[in-house]
Length: 187
Image (cartoon, rainbow, N blue to C red; front, side):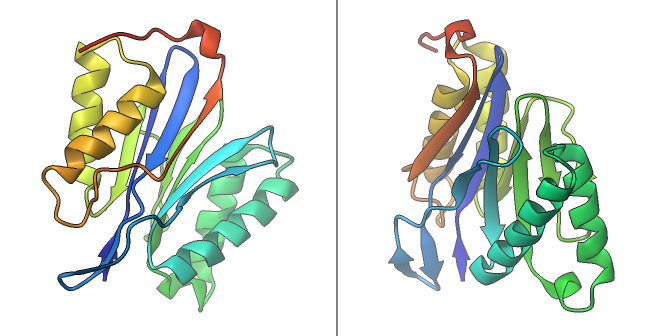
């Protein structure tokens, strides 16, 4: 089973996250509109996107939400606590999923090997089309004036032109930040 490409981008004080939501089994598309991008109310609005086994990702998301409440909304602290739990708990360490976590200041990748990574550039992507969406988002971030939500949407579209398991149609694009500070324009 393959599915879902998630990409997150930060530009001009706005963070956007998009996911395509295609789920395939072999050569068959089982679902085209799975929603794997969410806004959490804890911490003033944290954006989360997940790829991997759905049950595993939802379990990790639940653990992360608990850690976020305990950390009083501190995204980095909650991510580190979730990663520690993920690595030390017998059941959790076998879960196969990746989470992208974002708030107004942080953009993090929480991996199944227990790593919490902050990218060098304000863009991160996971899932079957993750490498393609990452390359597209980086190029658009460097060479266009598109806003963060526009870059996220276009990165999913471009990944879908290359990756068989990415539909190229975002099922959801969420953003945080001050939209008055965004710049928008054509490539």
